[in-house]
Structures are given as C-alpha cells and as structure tokens.
Image 1 (spheres, rainbow, N blue to C red):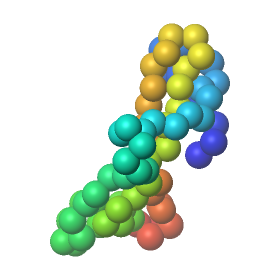
Image 2 (tube, helix red, strand yellow; image 1 turned 90 degrees about the horizontal axis):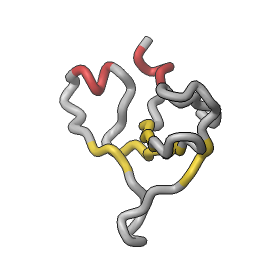
Image 3 (cartoon, one colour; image 1 turned 135 degrees about the vertical axis):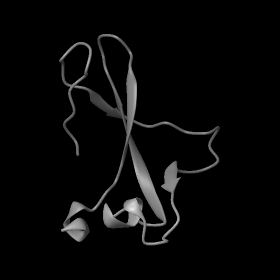
Length: 71
C-alpha cells in the first residue's frame, strides 16, 4: 500500500496524512449486512491512507481492505 502512482502525472505519490482538525484518524465506516462491501472484506471501520502527488497536488485516499477474506 506504500507505493502509488499519480493517475494524472504517472509519478510516485508520497504518503501523507489528512486530518479533520486533529479530531482523529479518518476511516471508512460500513455496515456489515453481508452485502457487497462485506464480500470485499471491508470491516466496520477501515483506516484510510492518503497519498499526495508532488507534481500536481492531487491527493487520493485508499481504504485498508483485506482482500484475502473475499476469496
């Protein structure tokens, strides 16, 4: 998860931190109802990782998904 490439510039993005005024870590919250997200292995709260492109400034967020559970 530590290496991502910018979809616009095709350069390696740098891991960064996105905060909501120091309130805490960002995460994706999902329902565990056996639906699509459950089959993808997304838990109730999954941490987000932020990556910043040093060329254009685009920032992307990626959820920490365990893909081994979806098989």
